[in-house]
Length: 224
Image (cartoon, rainbow, N blue to C red; front, side, top):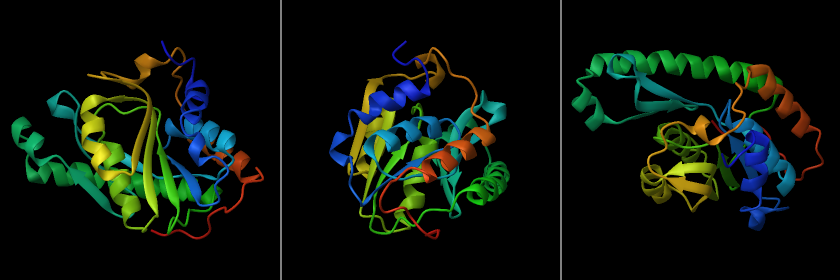
């Protein structure tokens, strides 16, 4: 497997993002929870701030747990309507599932922004980091969320991605950076020797550690 753990993946990914090292206009936005250990290493090695952007997948449990969309901070909802029709998932069911995940996003905002100030992303170049992309639904919601904050540019950066996700998401970003690309990516965890769960406490700890790093241009109040 290409990565020992998420820290190793973050170090490998950082080597492909050297052009952004030391820039005062750059912020790493990691998707909790799994993306935060990756983003932590990227931010540390590039010498830029780390923050989080919360996005949750919408999963149709009655349809083999297929991902049919995602929600993110700022009230963003992205739904694959064509897939929902193919699976026979009604609009009412989609709305209910999205509401459940939206409430979880709100809860996580209280958890993570309670231990770390939410980012001001206006006019900044954002490196959106996760531990991998299979369907791309969560990252698409994340991109839509940050677009509302008027950043200078969006860069998607992940250790592994599927070709399908790359084809879709690269149209919405200045750059799409990856270590490996394959199709299909059945499960991101298969690319890691150690894919241990990341807890909410782990996320807050890493955010606390990066807040003590001597990085320039740390964001202020939330743009959402």
